[in-house]
Amino acid sequence: MTAPLIDPFARAISYLRVSVTDRCDFRCTYCMSEHMTFLPKAELLTLEELDRLCSAFIRLGVEKLRVTGGEPLVRRGIMTFFRAMSRHLQSGALKELTLTTNGSQLAKYAKELADCGVRRVNVSLDTLDPAKFAEVTRWGRLPQVMEGIRAAKAAGLKVKINGVALKGFNEDELFRLAEWCAAEGQDLTFIEVMPMGDMGNDYRIDQYWPLKDLRERLAERFTLIDLTDRTGGPARYVRLAETGQRIGFITPLTHNFCESCNRVRLTCTGELYMCLGQEDRADLRKPLRTSTDDAQLEVAIREAITRKPKGHDFDYSRQTVAGQMPRHMSHTGG
Ligand code: SAM
Ligand code: SF4
Image (cartoon, rainbow, N blue to C red; front, side):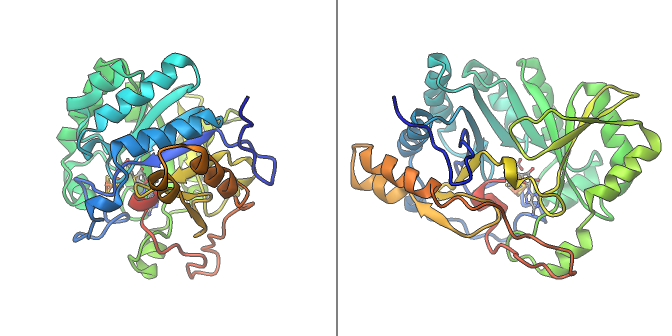
């Protein structure tokens, strides 16, 4: 039996998030600049390499795989990869195959994703107002995403909505978003904006809407019941007594969730980040390309896991963005 991946703090690594592309058909203001330079194709792992790498992690005990990006569904041939991963669902080695998407291509792919064994999708949506949606995503159009969400449901996929909490932008839509998700039977998770990329610190602090404040606002209208359930991710959940729905909060900056971190992140170039908030990473592309045998790759993965840190360093508290990470979320895969 292959020994599972356990880090120095006795956390078993069972969750891999894999970014399959740095490209995207949107340009969300908090994620990318409008004129992004993307990586040359040769830098990207091929679909076959992604398959080998993810399969190695699954052999080493990863049970949950989340595909992300950039926008995962704009990667050419991506369904070949989902098909390849579905064999691990069939064997029982993989318990869950899922993705985070902006929803723009769901109308096209929802059925095929469901056929590959995907049961749930996270769709990122920060506003229900078409004009504001176009403003924040720059290139996105709300009706297309709404159509994608409908297609996902029609295909039997469970949809969860992820919204970035943005001060002065979607504060006024809090109840509307919650009520819409309740009516649609969708869980809703809010994410605190993180200091990623080189978008300027003032901009970040300006838009920073602490989820503590968001939560208090929510409690003005709803009765919040704290839930202890975790989904293997960093979100904490409450149930709204009035609607019965779950609302999640991902607060990487104000709440320490590192102690239960079971995840690592793989970039589309084969770099493994052991922590979202730290720069340390391991190059897995090299062992992947040096040998067709996976032995070197497994050694490199194990070595990387021994370097998984206890926690990250984000800190907004002094009104400067201490611990700011220079890379974009679209690179590491949010
Ligand atoms: N394109 C897909 C999407 O938007 O769902 C997947 C990749 S995107 C980088 C993953 C998530 O990261 C999205 O929910 C997005 O809102 C979030 N995100 C991007 N930049 C962020 C930032 N600076 N702070 C917090 N969340 C961010
Ligand atoms: Fe694209 Fe997702 Fe980043 Fe928006 S958040 S620009 S949809 S990768």
